[in-house]
Amino acid sequence: MNLRKLQLKDAPLMLEWMHDPSVTHDLHADFASKTLADAEAFIAASQDVSTDLHMAIVSDLDEYMGTVSLKHIDRENSNAEFAITVRSASMGRGYSWYGMAEIIRIAFEELGLNCVYWCVSRKNARADRFYTKHGFREIVDISPEILQRYEGVEDLKWYSVLNGDDYTNEAVCKGSVAGCKVVGIKTIPTVNAGELSFFEANHDIPFDIKRIYYISKVPEGVRRGFHAHKDLKQLLFCPYGKIQLILDDGSVREEITLSDPSVGVVIDRPIWREMLWMQKDSVLCVAASDYYSTEDYIRDYQEFLDFVK
Image 1 (cartoon, rainbow, N blue to C red):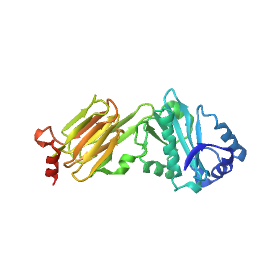
Image 2: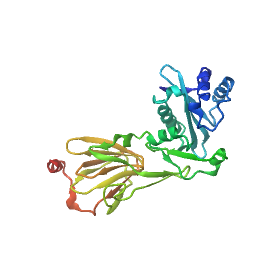
Image 3: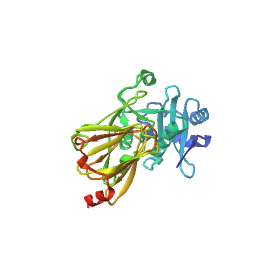
Image 4: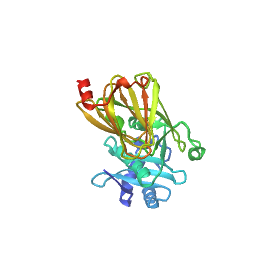
C-alpha cells in the first residue's frame, strides 16, 4: 500500500466508485452524474495543493484503490477537513485505514497542523463502525464557519483528532504492559478548542481516589521512579508532553510511551516503575487509591523481587 499524487490513469477507477451505489449511497454529493471528464478534471485540479490535498491510495502494484483528502487546509487556525472514499474492491483489505492514518500523519508531521476533523451521515452505519472501531470520538461543538459548508445537510456526526493524540491506538491496542491495563480516558474533543478528558473513581478506574499528584518541570532525559508500592493502586497518565513508562512485575519488563492525555495505565499490584522524560516540561499525573505512606514504598529492586516472590 502507498499514497501518491493522483494521476490521469486513475480516472477510470475513480469513476467506478462514483457510479457504485454501494459506495456512494450515504454520501452527500451527486456522484452518479459524474463523467470520465469530471474525474480527469478533478485529478488535474488536485495538482494545486494550496488549500486541498488529494492523494491516491494505491496497491503495491500501483492500482488506484481510493482517494484520501485534506480539504479546506486552514493554516491560520491550523486545521483541515479529512475525507476518504475507496472502491468496493478495496473494502475490508486495510486500504481505508492505511490511507486515513497516513494522511493524518502528513497533516501533523509534514504540514504542522494541530487538528483534523470530518463528518459523516448518522445513517452511514459502515463509516460509523469504522471510526468507532479505530477509537475516534464524536465532537460536541462545531464552529459556525465549518457548519456553513454543510448548510441544509442534517443529521451529521462529527469527529476530530488532535496533534499528539494516539490516533493509531498503539497504546490502547497493546492492552497491557507488564500485566498492567492500558486504558482509554473518556475524552470530548472540540475543533479549535482542545479536548476535555475525565475519569471517575470506581466507574472508569477500579478504585476510589484519595490523592492526586503530578510531577512537572523535569528536564529532558531525566529518569525518576525506581520504586514499587505494596498495596497502593494508581492511574498514571501524561496530560502534556511525552514520558516513557518502564514497568517490571519481577519477571517481565516492558515499556510504553505516554503522550496522549486520553491514554493511561492502571497499576493495581506491586510493580517496579521507572519514568523517562522524553520531552522537556512533560507532566506525569497520578491518581492514587490511598494517602501518602512511606511504609508502602519499596525502593530497593532486590527487596521488590523478594516481595513479589
